[in-house]
Image (cartoon, rainbow, N blue to C red; front, side, top):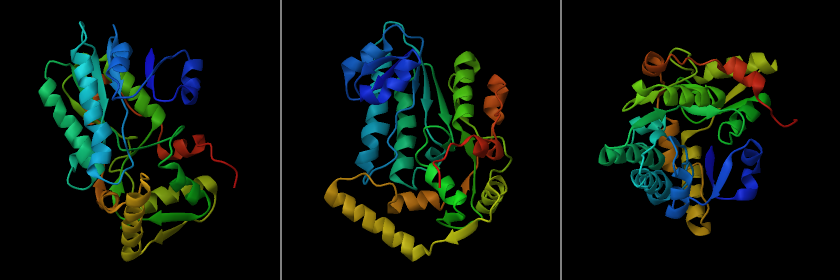
Length: 281
């Protein structure tokens, strides 16, 4: 098993697990060829989730994906591709990120000779997560910051279940050519009341929903974007990201992937919170 690593010292945990590391990034064609040499399958999970322009996201999520596809095509024996996209790709008009993930999927039409499966996970949490972790840390302190309506619905998935889903797709050729959604199995996902209710039971404390005024979040997002334009930073909260966060339906179901592979999730939010390793308060 090999992995592409931009920074070898930061990837030592993979080497300790027996993974062979190839130094480079998606813009390094030689590293990609070394990575893919005589392999059976490629799991393409690299992606940009922060940025201040469409170009910031496209550089990795579109151009980087194109580079992976070209490297696969250059192999004498082309490996299968498992491409991790995102549930947001179904609404490409909402944000720079969602458009980049959708456009990355569209590239596959130009590479019809490559056997591929696209997986669209919802919000992922668990070991290694940096995006959902602050939300759970605040909940443990008794606050849930809601960027829009608390009635919006979304699905979640624990990273362990996502990994098992990837393995299931690799083991079943029936997934080739499919775009598959997945979730933790909760029908119709969660709204903010339900998420905080489960978290409140787990941490045995009251959690207050804090609805930030729309004008205030809009102002913060606009300021983030302007400051990033000066400093060159890659912000998370921008006006396009707010549109994505406020969307009322990020619910997914497992019908297609379960039918194709038999995979079913094992970890719901209640169990996932029990496995979270949060720093001391």
